Image (tube, rainbow, N blue to C red; front, side):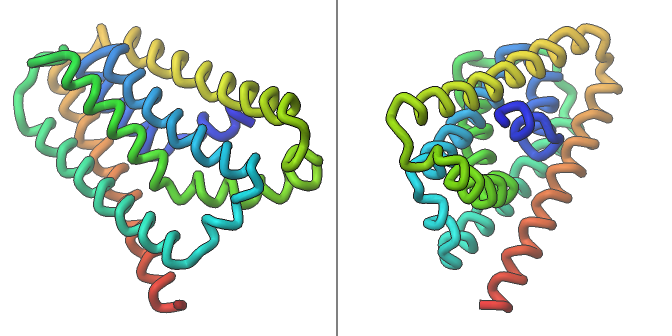
Length: 202
């Protein structure tokens, strides 16, 4: 389940690709590591039987609106990066850039509508399996297994991007930044429309 949750392409993957193409493994893994925080948060909510909490309309609308704005900001950053000549390496303070990548991954994960929908549906499945309300040991094993699958994907994706990065030329990097910007912008627009639909239907 951890692999099934983390592997589908989305905003986190686009941001990982964008930052990893510029700064290598550290920045790519920083985004992925941050996204694991969101994964762990929703996993713990579902395992604690609190998945229904995310069904509160006001919470869904708030998370969706914030997520749409954050995605639009990242899309704008991608286009800015494409227009600004940069070396294909982390610039400035590497720790600051890695921290920024981590925070971006965490915010994307916590405001990701896909994550909310995934855990809302999985919450019922976990209950039917008897995992919700099970012993601490059983819950711990499930949680550790899920996070291990997600972590393995995070390392594999960051490593693959870092390896492929050596063949990137500046023009290819700019094209990649534009493509990521378009993808992030599309995700932002989609999230925005969902928020509007929720407001209209509320």
